[in-house]
Image 1 (cartoon, rainbow, N blue to C red):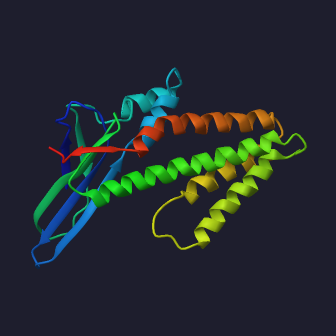
Image 2 (image 1 turned 135 degrees about the vertical axis):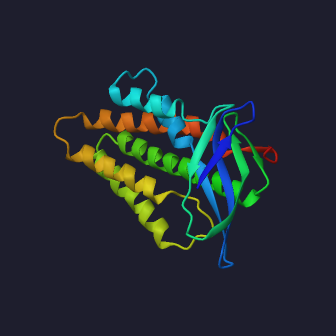
Image 3 (image 1 turned 60 degrees about the vertical axis):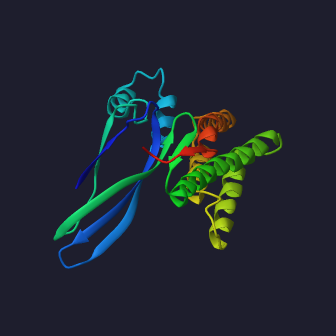
Length: 221
């Protein structure tokens, strides 16, 4: 099934949630939600500004600046099972580039905010750990020191019970792995490489931060 999402607002969209109800010939009714989160593409597009490589040009050709622009149409291809007799899809959450949101499904909106905040907090934890390692002039292996501490944070978090998503352990582990690669490399200035990671993550936090503190205005139109 292809669901066409049309942005009838005057603002660029950074995420939307679709509530779906499927009815089948045998009487089954399936209900579920699909979230399309675009902030990752928005951040990548900003990082590629001024980059003229083929990969960057291909990204811009495919995704533009990462958002669903005002007036644009998005085709969401969704699987269905045989025997479908009725299909209902409602966009019940929309978030915009200006940091506002429209919602008739506050649970879904809350999940978007929660995931973005967890992403932001994980970046903040990782950068603080790396900066602390860099600040220790006596540490001859700051990349490995930071990698161990970041991995420990992820491991401890995974071992605990959580009622909400307040950390992104996958992101922490990804940064830890990147730091291990820096440590293992023999042809880079390792402290400079760590500072580049800090600068990159702080730039990403700057872009993401307003979108983790959404202001709800009304329900989607």
